Length: 407
Image (cartoon, rainbow, N blue to C red; front, side, top):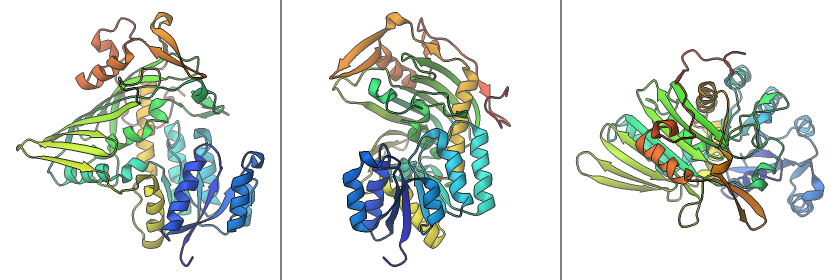
């Protein structure tokens, strides 16, 4: 395939399956080719490995073997949070471009380190924030910048994504604060739902390619599961652009009344209108009485980062899901933990065990409605008069350079 960008995917299981699907789509489009994979557990992927051998895809046992062999342009890393920065830096130092999964990392100093490596090596790196490439987010950003919507004054984000025991046992870093001495801060707001925080920071910025500056964070962090970190969060984020975001998310609230995963739903109050956004659809009501509906159509957001990588390498197109975007989201997470240094346990009497098939789920009574109220009213749980809620104070992020701030 002439001029095709050569990709190598590290890992066949877990989220690696999504990367392999994206690689197949890019290859079908004639934009790239899957040249190599790294598989550390071949006994679990015998059929897939046989398929790849038949296609001429090179197979390696370790990342170091791949690096030594060379022959690819981009290495993709659908791996654990604690390895994102370390292995991205290793690949760039070895001369490769990188597509790393979200979230970028758990601590702002690690994000800064990777930015330094990128600038020193001159390599292209982007993060798998696929929703930034959806048609709805792209078009909303245009309307913010060209004045049709104008500046975002308030953004409200809510979601209930129940996760059971199998979610927290799927890997050794799920629900952790650290892994191998590296900050992970794994949680709904720094993993499963990290995309949607990043959408807000992108839409609230004054430019097309840079995130907004985060000036303060006030957060309440809770957990029902016996894990190191949180499974529920509500937070208020203030930005240098004058925008405010209130975010309420949980893995231990109930499903929606129709039995589906709820949200994320994002509402925005802008200078010249309001927006209601759910994945795939944005509805705008302008202050002049006009309205507009935008859908994702065939934006193929999952492969957006991949196509951005190809166009960046071939044509010098700017990277949208940049390390700066990842740093902004990391700063918000760090600020949440600075505002609320200790994760609060839900009272035992508020937590119910629900079996769904063979898997155990935990549900906090009334939390589904509370998530909605928090976002809709722009208030944290303690501000809504909830008896078990623990209040916090806003934490200034001005000049913030290291998590935790006290060392």
